[in-house]
Image (cartoon, rainbow, N blue to C red; front, side, top):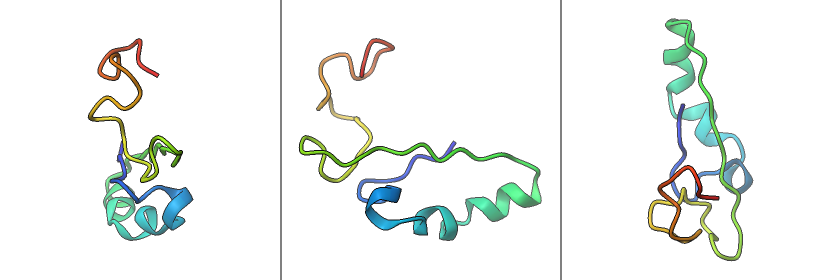
Length: 66
């Protein structure tokens, strides 16, 4: 599973991160399936960052988080 960086979601840069990061070549040569989950950019998260600092609430690091 590959998590994009801030500002690198499909909604922001299309499929460039997926196509040019190099993960697909490694996966293909090793028979590995790669998942590219996405975060949407919103008014509270304009750069489409994964919640590593708690902008979704206090439960961001738990199973109860959004």
